[in-house]
Image (cartoon, rainbow, N blue to C red; front, side, top):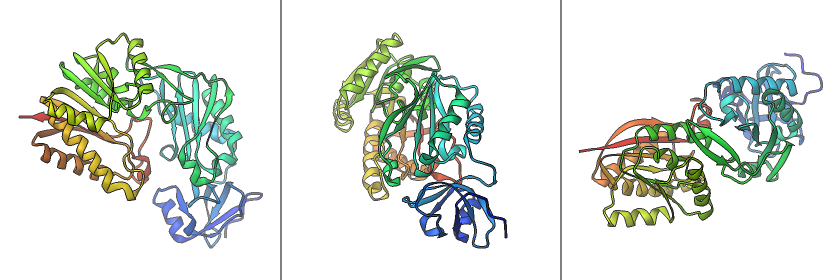
Length: 392
């Protein structure tokens, strides 16, 4: 039997729980614990029933995910430890042609429930478990040491925190982070909104997909549905004669117009509309587009909503396919974790069959490389996309 760690609470897990760690997944669920260290969240040592040390983990006593693996070793998990791990994650992002990107992608970077995004000289972070929240000061010290930002904002307003019994809040942790921050990706500038924007202020995970679609944009008309602040539309506008950018939010469209002005782009028209209704209208009018982008919100919030979500995805894809000009390009994606890559591609194929169009698959994509996907942790691979070209 291994000697216990002095001063560190211990959780004892089942063989099934231990096997999950051995298979590379960092989570252990409530049902796989034999003995818990009490009601105090934080960092705990983890052993099997024979007392063999398995590692150290974040412990969340109110969550179904009780343990999240941090390290298999016995080293102190202190501010220096967090700084070293965050610094290593930042080094893996070297060479990105952007001033806004994800530095730490939670489980994808071996730092479960921690998200750290950089927007120029500022950092926006999310602490998504009670175990991590308990060591907030060490995490913030590690961020400061590794990244030396001018300010740190905690966007702890993700609904995930409710499952942990944590409050939703947006709080300044260090310095001052402004309401908007101008950033750049591959020559396109835009203003992110760290305090109020989607996610931590912008959709950083689509950056490489925006570049890909920009490179395949045709010279004629382009259509960007669910445009939000116009991130895809800005890339389309550099090649297309004209772009129609559509969103149901007038506020989002106003921000998109500001971004277009920032880049000197005058060929984007901003249209407030329901995407489903507009697609039907455009189909009735027999409109045609050289390039179409479908970047909808997550239709499937749970397994129970999967069937209905797939019907929605299929409808917008079928109608978008019918709008493609000869040899037109469609980029379509889903950020619903419950719609896995195989199911997504099956939906795209079904939509193609019903649309009456033949479509060549040019690329299957995921999130950018600053959002690493681990094949044995499927939760890290929520975003999937397909780039398609109409063929005669």
